[in-house]
Amino acid sequence: HIDIALVGSQKALSLPPSLGFVALSPRAWAAIEAEPQYVGYDALAPFRHAVANRLMPYTHNWYAVRACLRRLRDIRRRGGVARLVAEHAAAKLRCLEHAARLG
Image 1: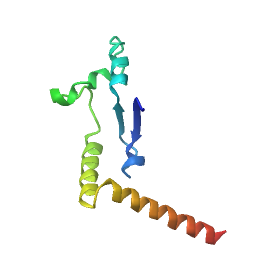
Image 2: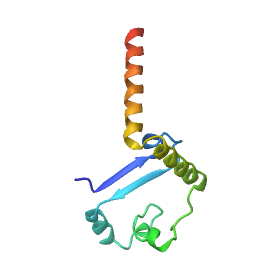
Image 3: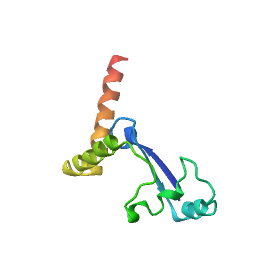
């Protein structure tokens, strides 16, 4: 099981390296809530109910968020994540084939 997953926009979505995504399991949230006094800029507790409250705790790079939303719509329009993964796998094979020919 994965308790905390960290993903960069440049890796997962082929976007510029401007956003980071965090996914937390219930067990991770319990650990975070057990230390409520931590309030640093990288604190995750303020995000616990951000969507439900429609209020983000910090100022975000809204241009990057907008680009991300656009990219997600593009992925959906082009057939979803499975198709994106297949396209990347095919590109990887083409690169390996070309590299092998170069020696």
